[in-house]
Amino acid sequence: MLPFILAGLALAGLAALLRERKPKTVFISYDYDHDRRYKNMLVAWAKNEKFPIRFDDRSADVAIDSTDEAVQRRAISAKIHRSDMLVLLVGREAHKSRWIRWETAKAVHLGKPIVAVKLKKKYRAPAGLRGRGVVWATSFKVAQVKAALERSSG
Image 1 (cartoon, helix red, strand yellow):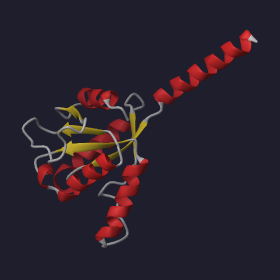
Image 2 (spheres, one colour):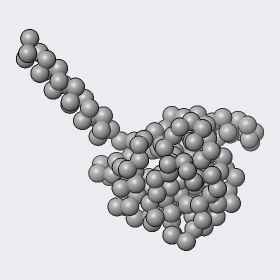
Image 3 (spheres, rainbow, N blue to C red):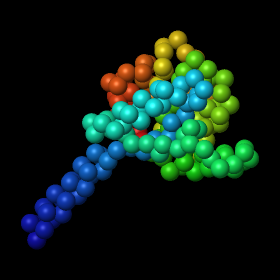
């Protein structure tokens, strides 16, 4: 009986290890007009097997087949819901974006962890992030972004 119990524990441990190594799925919230290149760099980093994330790469640059804002919000909401976390790129204009505010509020409502990445330290974050348990990367460097993603609970 003891060998079966030990084998079961070993399998449970292996399953836990595999789950830990499973890459995270993220929704990236960013200012399409100003910060698209940073989003594209994140996607490129994610192709490196040592980087701990994968993407639901259907952010604002992948068209939602509708001009109806309610339809767009439902589609984005579903994408955030299916993601493990939201990654917010805090660029020069991010604090002014109503879509970024809405996406982060939706992530908070859904209980999704948020990792905020300042593209430059001086950039202002959108309102509504204080007291929300946001994990910060204070610069857009691979090591800082990776560390923030690893610290997040998503």
